[in-house]
Length: 162
Image (cartoon, rainbow, N blue to C red; front, side, top):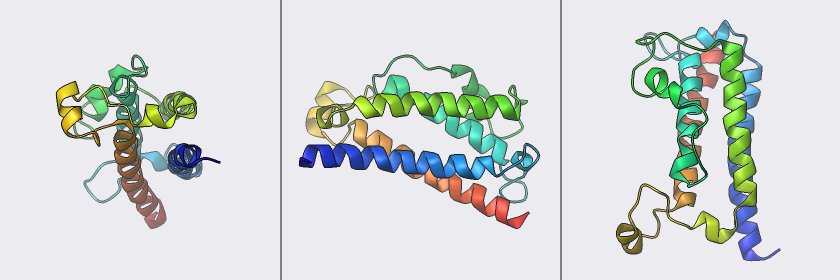
């Protein structure tokens, strides 16, 4: 394997690992358990799943991969705190949307070359990218992986207390 292939596989495997860990944890939770709060008065696990799904869905245009699949999630899971806007999806539907968004991201990431990973994301201008080439697709995916892992820790903690 070349260094380029190793880097490409490492990034992809890291993303898949985080997605799979969250998926396994969610598969252990009943629909009722998704309604648990991560801490008293804090977000529900359901809300965190919706939030992560919306954030990942926003990655399609940010990474230049096309249009979002579910922009309707933003009002409930990004623009507002938990329970301000009623959940529009059932637990089954939200789990399906989570899988749909992440399966499509993984399929796109599997086609990325090292050059694709290091290409600028769409929220940075050419001028700013020339000054800071670290503002690339790889940086976005690493940031989103960390974000997902943070919320996974919250979900695991909530599940372990109940």
